[in-house]
Image 1 (cartoon, one colour):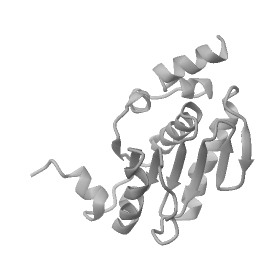
Image 2 (image 1 turned 90 degrees about the vertical axis):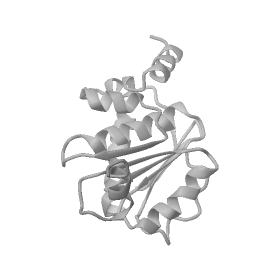
Image 3 (image 1 turned 45 degrees about the vertical axis):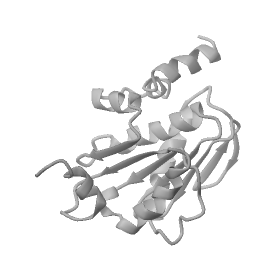
Image 4 (image 1 turned 135 degrees about the vertical axis):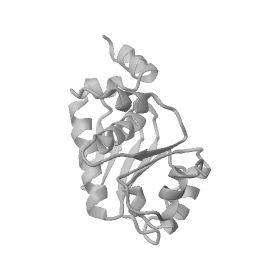
Length: 184
């Protein structure tokens, strides 16, 4: 298949990105890769593949949308860095991905103008990014509500997408409230 054919196929079915990286997705992961929902909450047990599929979505976004800004946010810089390393592992496995023009331990810039940046979960230190295409909020049940307040403006001007993934962590915070909003 030609490069243009692969790009078209991935645009029609983003789950193909996983296959092109040598991964086989569970059905729920493939459905999530194909989803275009602007806000996604993933409440999953540990080791179910939520970080893997979120990393693949981050990668697919950066590869398929030239000039995309993808932010990976977790309660700690170490956690964001781990998610970033997962993205980079998949990027290196994707043979026809745009070339890397700049790279550090916590950010990468691609030849198509897209950037993927790993940030700590401290609202005081993540400000300054605007027009995010995608924000992945890892361990979202453990971040402070102020962090979400800092992230929302990053998505407002771009109509960007938010994926909040987490294991359960008590009956508090925006993640819990959003997860249980329709109950009562």
